[in-house]
Image 1: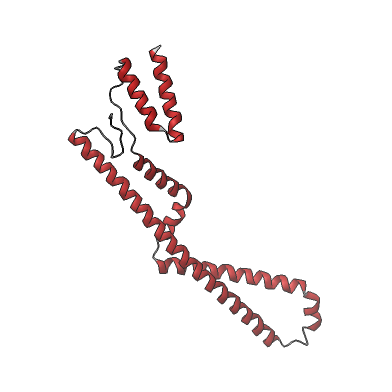
Image 2: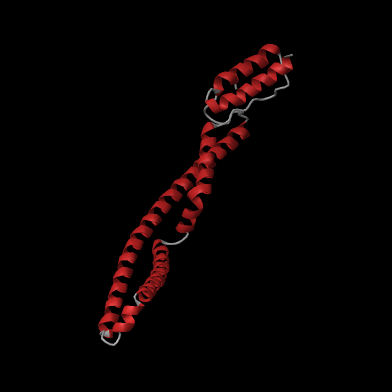
Length: 193
């Protein structure tokens, strides 16, 4: 009978972790063990909540935006922006050429009828001017966007590194406490352990 009650308290303990009422049921479990004399439980370790929160935050960052941001911060700012500008120039050039070809195909009849009347030099100069304007506007927008991306990536990777340093400090404190014989894992514990 006591064994079933002990299992019941452990299952209630797991349910209460999700709702945030861990401490009261942990105390009830400890009181039950002390009252009924169940001596199979040797040592109770509490979970360091701060360490769990920091590790969860770091893991979520790595899975969501961390990979992209870490790739960005591997470059120097100038190198990252230059690479993005070069690839942006290539894609805007290809896009402009495709749009110009599509415009030419759509207006093929007009172009063939008026080809001998048109001033080809001014027509080519107009296309070149439009191309330079499109590339300049696109590159200005891309420069601002890449600068912002690099700044936010650098800031978030710095926050991630700070979180890892905190986790490392917690582990070093735990090792220090373990070597000195202290059984506690952190600061936030109840008065039984």
